[in-house]
Image (tube, rainbow, N blue to C red; front, side, top):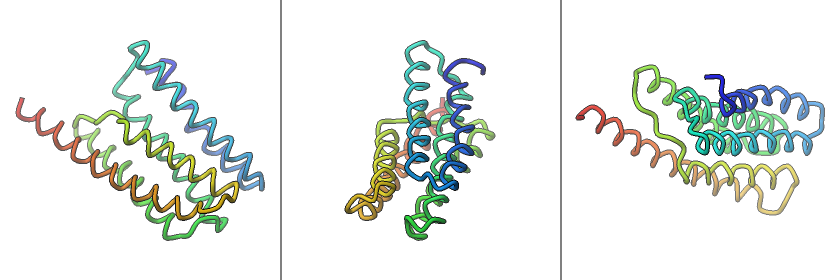
Length: 173
């Protein structure tokens, strides 16, 4: 459990209150850079885990959970500050909460989890870009956010299909 990639993943959980404190103190752009630091630890932990054969089942479960927990904190901060609509926040929250709950239930039922795939990673990058556009008040930021929400829903459907296929195979083998 205590390998470097898992420690980096756990550090992302610790960055959530840091992000929230910085955002609530009124340093919205600085809070984005805390989010960016969390994103960089996500890239780094995955790279180190794969390169050094340190991929663990706990890391595979905690990594997306850390990502989703951070994104939920960001969603809450943006909606409470009226930077995004409650409809966009609800769509993002329901998708991520569903993924967290589904992942936890599956894990505790002994189901195999689907590792992060290219679509999931792309969705994360697109969300970071949408958040950057919103925080820095760039044109079309809210329209782009809705585009990313649709992409994330498609990605979730793909993940669910992969999960069902993986666990159907493991039952029959």
